[in-house]
Image (cartoon, rainbow, N blue to C red):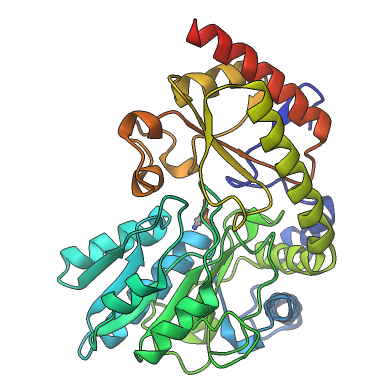
Length: 387
Ligand SMILES: Cc1ncc(COP(=O)(O)O)c(C=O)c1O
């Protein structure tokens, strides 16, 4: 990072780790084969895919055959939800999602409702947590699938996925979780519906560019035995679950990023948790009338989402941007829109409060010195805007 630029938007995307790039490079040039080709150049690419799939499965405590590569988190979410609803709609046509899902889940669910599927959107409390009783009450004999995110991209709230999945399974329904934001910080143990120590999900979505891997590649974990329709039709790649020539270099990079994560995640998450808590404390000390959104404890180690009373979040972000500080109003995908965040509205914030939200998301290159500088800069802007 250039010394005079401070990046605090790691939840939008992470820079590519140089060790990941190194591993990808041969597959962009010399080892360019198509993994479906029978000759030695194709077999070389197929072997690289196999190794990457092994690495990813191992880091998720899943089986090799349970990993289906996609073009990213959005496709994995679409594949999980549309795929299951199409496969089960004769018996069960009801879908449950939470109100704070990423648009990759929420917009997919709303589209399915337009097509005639039944949809229930679960509320969250003021901290962004789902009450398991609300899920229990929403389940019906016709519920095919429940999709609840592991950790929220805007406010960092972490849900008790194992408990929600257990309640869902007692109803005979399937459970999907969007783990796009959690994977880089929290150990993920899939390993089948009945695995005692695991999350107990039937499907889970992942994205490489949130874990210091490349953009445009992700994966859907599909527990062995789960039936779903393919979205993309053509060749027989990915066990006929996703047609199209695989993004070999991207998948190789994803595999390497997973391997690095398994070795480095624990220490980095501890470091970030400490930085996050000191940063929150400093912000509250220096800037009056701010509010932290999302659960104080059940929150991602890198997430600090605040609103500054009486000040527009967009204006603050613009000013920070001019000072070389990159932060966000929440989801990168909706930052261009003027609508207040659906996540903050779901927490019960007024439109005005919701439009004063700023998300700082910390990552590998974040230092305490940077956070001190950001606090000082923010304080100066807030004082000026409030007078
Ligand atoms: C929770 C969540 N789900 C899904 C996505 C989409 O992932 P991708 O950018 O890989 O399509 C994102 C990206 O911001 C996300 O934060």
